[in-house]
Each structure stands twice: as C-alpha cells, then as structure tokens.
Length: 109
Image (cartoon, rainbow, N blue to C red; front, side):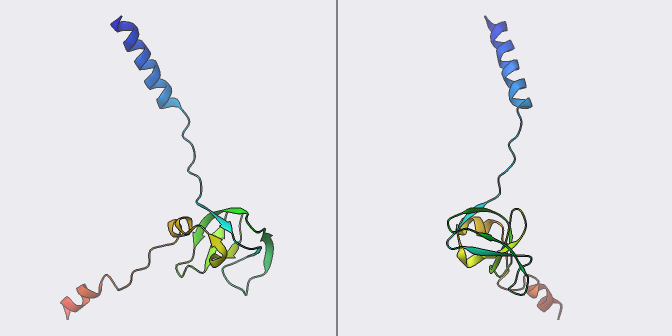
C-alpha cells in the first residue's frame, strides 16, 4: 500500500514540475473615454490610432509624472483617462520625494 502511494506522489510531483508556467499578464486599465493613441508620450507626437471608450488596455509603462502610459501593442495614451489606479501604479517608476543621497552629502561637508 505504501509503495503505490509513493509512486502516485512522485508522478504528481513530476507532473506539477513539468506543468507550463502561465505568463504573467500585463496590468490592465479601462478607457473612460475614446482616447487618441500617440506615437510617443506627449501631444506633439502624431496620433496613430484610438482606444474606444470602456475598452480594456494592457499597460507597459507609465511616465514618472503619471501623465502618459504606454499600452500593449505600441502607442501612448493620456493616463488621466484610464481607470485602474492599481494597474497604473504598478507600471510607474518610483519617484523619491527627496534626494536619498542628501544626508550623505551633508555628512561629507
């Protein structure tokens, strides 16, 4: 009885180890209005497409200022028209409120 249980446990462990790992999905947000998709993060870049109102978009990166977000498939949209602050926050680089090296500089003076 013990031997078949060990065999079953070993087969189960092997199956789990070989199971494909799901790719991590990009954070998504919803467009609260029809959005122009631009070639770069700014109004000076040409419009290359549109995202319809209520469409869900995958987010790749948002600028540190939080004004523009790059979406999957290429292009940039204005972040203030995206609903999903958790998704936006997860792809926005951290911004220090003060210089973390300031203390080190003062200590040297």
